[in-house]
Amino acid sequence: MLNRAKTALVAFGAVLALAILHFTGLILPIENGLRYTFSPVGSFLSSMGTGLKSKTQDYKSLAECQEHSSDVERRLGTVSVDYVRLKALEEENSVLRTMLGYLQKKDFDSVMARVISRSVAPEKSIVMIDRGSKDGLEIGLAVIVGEGIYVGKVTGIQEHTATVTLIPDPTSRVAISLTGQHKLIGLLEGKGNGTAVATLIPQEEPIKENDILVTAGTDEKIPGDLAIGMVNRIIGQPIDPFKSASIEPLVSLDFVEMVAILKPKTNK
Amino acid sequence: MRPSSWAMLVGGAMAGGIFESTFAAAAPFPANIIRPVLPCLVMLVLLTRSKPALFGAGIAGACLDLLSATPAGFATARLLIVMLCVEYLAEHVATNRSLFSAMALAFFAGILNWAFLLLEATLGNLVLSSHIFLEPWSTYLLIALANVAITASLFLVFTLFTKRFLISIKTQ
Image 1 (cartoon, rainbow over the protein chains, first blue to last red):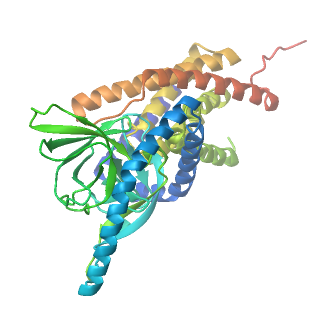
Image 2 (image 1 turned 180 degrees about the vertical axis):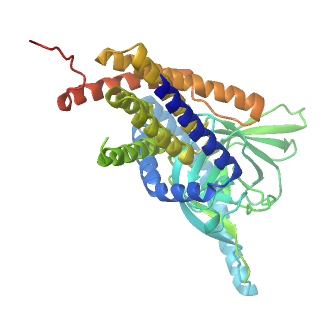
């Protein structure tokens, strides 16, 4: 009995000491070192879990596949028209820039990172990545996948790891714009469980279904014109001062394994 | 325990903690309910009693705290308390080291772990203004049942290698 009390006391003491050392930040270097050491195994296991999830979620019923296919075809028709128009504008823009001797400057560098772990709770959309302050990351930087699809921003930072809050997380907020408009039209808010809603859109804004939303560029560390998602449905009455829109992400955020963090270029 | 056994314990606890915080968080159902830490610690309590199980709980909990994307709710302390309770039960209630005792202890450990998480989440919201996010209660129930299945499997495997679970009958 005395032995048990002694063991419990030692365990309690160890926990208390650990808690004090953690909150005072005295063991932060050890914590960072351990996170750094475990991150390769963590990202491998996380990637295995994500792979398993993507494989199992591929199985859909025939009716679901047909419905999805017709939906995609309908959207493709709308987007194709926009694409052709934008392609023509892009070519014209490129010719004009060459004629003017305009040198396009990119103000952002990117840092590639792997996802180490994810939040367990379904309403949260937070991932941990294997890059941190040592790699020049800061809180608020934009996180993208593919060729500039915005997926979230850095909200927590350690020496070798960082926490990224993805678009559907209820704490996520980002200023949005319509493609090619370069002006703030509203705010994209995460609603949990993989969903997000664009809010505070003035009634006069000509937003409609299948429009692509991009970042507005008004956030300090988030560049503009990063694709965010497609408008699924407009919510609100014409008499309301503002309208909302439910947004469908352009990539499935459950399966993101590799991301790039955009950090402002440092002038030397 | 021999030094090699302690080394294996440290390695195993680390692997368990990393597995739970990374693979289980990303995997789909039913792979996401496979949480090996508690069943392994329960088996350790049955095999060796106190110290190694508490040591393993501390290490696995620390790995969970370090690698979880959202706050894991001081898993180190939670697992240590759960293991202290399990050890007490193993010594005073489920004393016979049978398969059914092991299964009952594993289920109890799963439910107790959930209860402490719930308490942490409530206190976190009320007192500390910090949020610990919980999975749905049905997931925790399934995890507790999965704990029972894993413990039963481990128990059966251990019976192939050890005689600790056999009833000793002295014959004249």
